[in-house]
Image 1 (cartoon, rainbow, N blue to C red):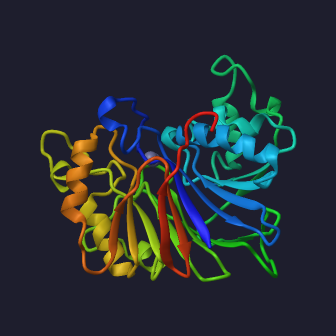
Image 2 (image 1 turned 90 degrees about the vertical axis):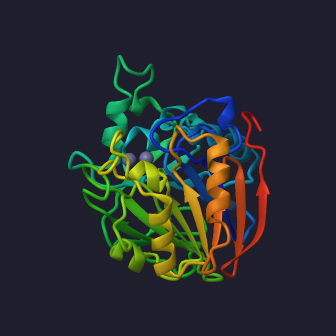
Length: 319
Ligand SMILES: [Zn+2]
Ligand SMILES: [Zn+2]
């Protein structure tokens, strides 16, 4: 049994707007968490958008109390600001006992830590990357990689009784501008439940064949839904080639991948709660899968491939 928690669901940039509080204004950050055999919670954190900041405040308390593992992976889909801007304010980075496996695509012909280091160079940030107290271990991920997360929260190539299996797919431009993005398929080997994480993708007419194969029969597909069909076809505000999908594209990929649940994610920062609620009405009721709009604080518990619990967590600062 694993849980999927949404700490940030926006794309492009964070927003603080009274008309967007229901879905939330923080950028991409998703936590997939499961207890090991001793009851210790092992999280996989995907992306370091601004949602990671709140995640980090809550996580720090759980690290001190012993509820969560002090060793865990932080997986990056890619390095655009809406997926990295929370990193510098991630509280566990300042805790010396914390061991963070920073994993992502090859960047500047080196590991992702190099890019994070440049982000924190003076005079742009008051603390340098090397001065962070946490221990950071860097790993480069490539298309087709498969690795496992141990009962201790460490990524390894082989493992007898892993807590998670992680498969990696890399898309390339023009699916997402410049280096593309990494997509992840995370499986709970204990009961076979799986989550395909597909965001920062501009899909194709009829679906993205590689993604459909990669996510085939996943229970949950979390998919980029930055644009409405009308916005994507707009002649006045062109967005084609920006590297994001429409709701219809997400529906097509989910349908052809035969998933049970399609989770809408990476919202346009201009989409207000009222607009997203209309979208929810429009797409709910699809007969091949259940359509779910994610929001900040949503926690879904997955058991044997079925969502058995859906709740809104209070993820406020300091909680
Ligand atoms: Zn993005
Ligand atoms: Zn991006």
